[in-house]
Image (cartoon, rainbow, N blue to C red; front, top):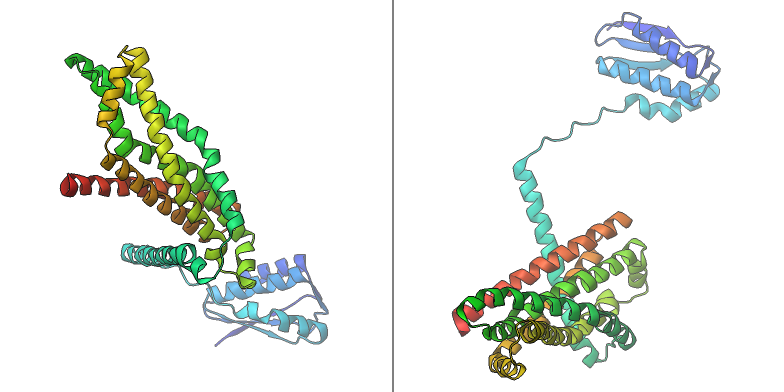
Length: 361
C-alpha cells in the first residue's frame, strides 16, 4: 500500500493548518492511500491547528484511506495524544428511515405507559384521600381549606354568570320554536329539565376544567420543573398524599355545590326571559317549573358533578406530574390538561345519556 508523506510546519495554527489541508487535498492522493504527517519539525500546536488535523483525518477516512502521524515529541506529542480520538472517530450512522409500523408501536407503548401511570395515580388518590386518614396516616387540612376557597368560592361568580346566560339563550331559542304552536309555557319545562339533568353539570364542569383543571396542571408542572417534586420525594413525603389528596377532596366537595348553583342560575335565566320578555304569568311559570323538576334529574346532575370533579382533578395532576422541559413544557401540559378534561367530560356525559336512555328510562 502506497504512503504519501507530508511535513507539518513548525507552528501548526489556524493559518498553517488550513494550508496543510489544502496541500493534502492537492497532493494527488489516491483512493485508499495512507497519509502520513511528519511532526518532527513541529514545535507548537494550537487548538485551531489540532482542529485542522482532525479535518484532514476526516477527509482521509472519507476516501477510505489511513491517517497516521509520526515524529511528534514533547508537548506536541502530549497534545496529539489528547486529540487522538478525533482522528479515528467514525462517521455517525444514518438515522433510520420513517417506519409507520415503528411509529404506531411507539405510540401504543407510550399510550400504555401513560394509562398505567394514570390508573396508578387514581388508585393512590383514592387511598390517600379516603382510606389513609382513617388509618392515622394524616391529611393536610390546612391546604384543604385553601383549595376549597380557591376552587369553590372564587368560582361562584363566573359559574353563576355562565349558567345564567346559557339559560337565557336556551329560553330565547326554544321560545322562538314553541311560539308557533302556542306552547311557550313549556319553555319552563325545557329549561328546568335541561339544567337539572344536563346543562348545569356540563357547563359547570367546563368552567371548572378551564379554571381549576388548568391551575392544577400548571401548579404541579411548575413544581416539577423547579424540582420541588423531587425535593418532596427526597424528604420522604408522598406526593399524592401531600399535593393530590387535598385537591381531590376539595373539588369533590365544591363541585356539587357549583352544579346546584348552576341549576338555579340556568333556571333563573330562563325564567327572566319567560316572565319579563314573553310576559308569562309568574305564578303559572312557577307551577310549570316545579312540576318539571323531578328528583331523578337532580340526582343525575349531582352524580355527574361528582364524577366530573374526580376526573378533572386526576387529569390535571397527571399532566402536571408528567411535564418535561422548561416553561414551554408547563404551557403544553396545561393546554393538554384542559383539552383532555373537556373531552373526558363529553365522553362521560355520553355514557350517562346512553345509560339513562337505554336502561333507566
